[in-house]
Image (cartoon, rainbow, N blue to C red; front, side, top):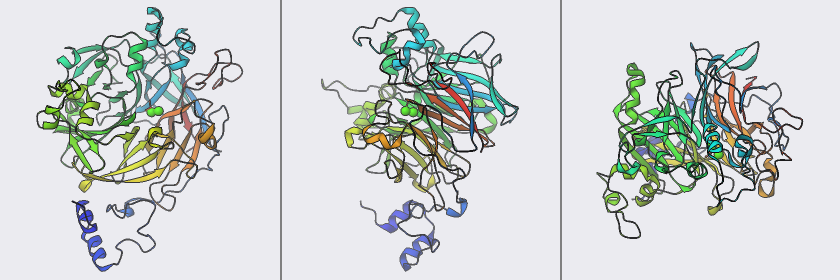
Length: 553
Ligand code: FEO
Ligand code: CA
Ligand code: CA
């Protein structure tokens, strides 16, 4: 059924004033706002009065190819941790290619706390970690030694570091009792429907986490770390069972002895991040993207409801619930529920063998399940974040050259009746990448409390500063208001060193510090003898992935 305008507004739970205004032709919204506004809030019944129009508070920088982390006048960065830094008295060291960051205050301070940091991959920079010449190696002939593989796996996963701001400068506490590595060598438990099932070859415990891209925080102060491109790590490190990877991992940074959990109910794919919120009915909802060409947008809705007083026991909510995948052409969330979905029960492979025989099979093979039920293939869904004021869900679609989408866009999804557990939604294109907007390939998103969007970009290091990407310079960070006269307009706040991507933006609660990862500086080099980036140490040093704290807000 095609919806007409009236049905559309009713669907969205828009107030009767808007309906009356359609009947009379008199707009219910303020006179200066037009139906062809830059965003569709007026169509979706969003109360703009709740938003304070935001203005850009910094002098935007220009795109540049400078080998530095460039910031607007009045802002500075402190290096908090670089690859190899000591993080505790045991001598554990900070991992490689830092990505997601999440600040967890100690005693509610915005100047002292724990920082969780993901460590994603090594790529051609592996040479600096294990000594293996990944630039010139024959991909068909993996000659990594056992010692090199151990170093490889140790460098990935995540770090818990304790950090402090003293005398105006952020620093790492290198002898912290909290300092901890969770790595490709750490023991994990599986939870949820796939734990112990034949789909994971009976495993209830698995070794290691890696390919940790972005993530999220839970409502009970633990972190969720997302395993993204695990396949290449499995191959490089000669691991046997790929079904142990591709999950969302929960870690409690405040308990150094806790065993991290991989929550199978949230599905297995190339997880980018998680955005957790609560539905009006109290269920926990987790939005997730699968970052690959033609992959899907998911959400998980818990069976039970959130109870603040239960604290960490709420983690059980991540073990039982419904995993949905999005069909954008119908505006519907489709439940990937084997027991109820005949399409999943009847799906067969090329040899006419059933694709799935259980819910565990569906969760382990999410991509096949999503495809079987007709989910919409997307253009690399990376971060999803929930708007802190109006509850709409922002989705970064990085790009998809197969679709001629080279610059990406940010989609904004509106759940029916603003209910995060709803099974129907609508959406708009909030902002589009391209020379006209100044940004390309949006990746991680963060909101400040005023509802402004902060976006980092991920132009691949092989395309950066050349061809159709030349005008964008190095990767950047952009500020995009979601209300007021500048809404939807991107202003550049930061530019990354050569070859790098900035990831994991995270604000302290007082919003005076922004943490950011500078990942893979110096990537896309031709020979190790001539590094392309020397950030952050300068001179002829090799580049070091590092986490920074930006102040000046
Ligand atoms: Fe690891 Fe999707 O970026
Ligand atoms: Ca990413
Ligand atoms: Ca990325």
